[in-house]
Amino acid sequence: MTVGIDDIAIYIPRLFVDARDFAKARGMDPDKLQRGLGISQMAMVDTNQDPACMAANACLKIMQKNDLSPNEVGRLYVATESSLDESKAMNSYVIGMLEQVYGDDSFGHCGGIECKFACVSGSYALYDNSNWIRAGEAEGKSAIVVVSDIAKYDLGSSGEYTQGAGAVAMLVNDRPRLLEFDPKVTATSIKNEYDFYRPFGKETPIVHGQYSNLLYLLQVKKALMLYKEKALSSGLIKLKAGETILDYIDFLNMHLPYSNMGKKAMAYLLRHEWRKLPRWKKVIEKIGMEEPVPKDPRGTIESVLADSEFMTKDHEFTKKFTKTEEFQEAYDSKLASSLIASQMIGNLYTASLYLGFRSTLEFEFQKGTDLEEKRFGFGSYGSGSSAMVFSGVIKPTYKEIVRDMNLESEIGNRVKLSLEEYEEIHENKRGLKENFLKSKKEFVLVDVKNTPESSGERRYVYNS
Ligand code: CAA
Image 1 (cartoon, rainbow, N blue to C red):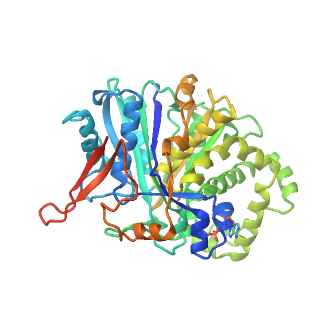
Image 2: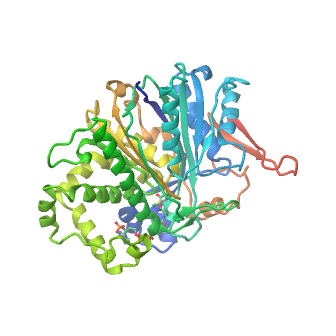
Image 3: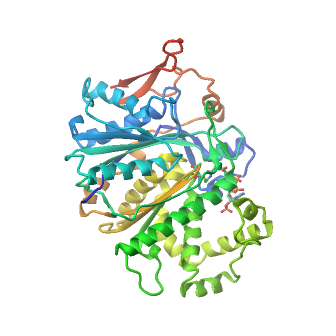
């Protein structure tokens, strides 16, 4: 049965911090952010916004754009790592907001839960909802999967320059106009890890930055190997001599905690895949050095990171590899367009991968690329940690969705925060009602109760 993404809508808050202002204030070289990590701006939520209202705004957009009535939606899932309650699921707040527009109990029939596994949970939500449709339970109805997050790190930490906020809503059904998922190839990896986590009651995560970068690469590679096995055994992809599975992925979308992580991941996966192929000999000649090996190739992530001689050589090797014509060709054709939105918006945790997908569609369409029948590969990663690799093929009807995409106009007039204003929001020094922007045609948070019997109750309104 055909199942896939029929449409996609985004909600990005209009406030932002400029990377150059940020670097100046923290005494850093702006080039580290812009060239080193690929960050130009980071979207920030206003005092009266939270992940639930961003999710509801993205949902409303996808419903209005498709003239959907609540009866046509059978499942509404929210995937997030910015949970508001230990028990009450975020989709219940979203349903409450949507019912302000569509009427009391209009979504009463609609099931759904909040999903958590750091940044990968949106991919699990998409997969599980696709299987709900494949199982024949949907009876023609669609599922909406929303990914919504505020990426917030401690002031002065190395994660602080990889912040951002936003939501992406995806309409999933058995008649997708955008992308059809490849069946029976979705692959996962999982391991109990502490690379990035947020203990109860803490607003910001505990992060082991370089450890998390390496773990991301290892987990996605592991999932890719399983994807490969499944794609070959199911006959989805048939490899000829000298080919790799990545030759059959026309566009690659990776989880993007910052835009350059996509490039890092692509370099790592290509090295892994090309190493055994005849083409690698030519690449090695161009690089002019052998590929370094850690002192203990079977060691732990800690032992690899502590092997400073290997790390320095490996860094040099990767830099040289990314400058080869072979890498550049793969990068320009498969990955570069997915990174543009992330540079402008920053980290959206669960939503980063899907903002990247949206970015590829919009910017490849603008370049005049014919996307019909092209295979998109997705490399999803969530700290803690799990990865999911899956793929899908673009449908002939994609143009009716993609031609109207315009990131800048969809965000609206962006307003730059001074560093003082940003820090006030970050440290919760401004009250909920001291918002910077007047909202129009969107949901905002208006109250959080603090009496003992109703502590934590949140109220939202739709400003028409
Ligand atoms: N000009 C140009 N480039 C410069 C530069 C300069 N002056 N100074 C440094 N750079 C480059 C460095 O060479 C490096 O690039 P390469 O990796 O390609 O060599 C890049 O800028 C970053 O430099 P560092 O690695 O030294 O940066 P850092 O240690 O300060 O922090 C980070 C980077 C680890 C990602 C940190 O921002 C962090 O901890 N972020 C949060 C955790 C994170 O995002 N982890 C990613 C994987 S986990 C995940 O994906 C889940 C999630 O969403 C959080």
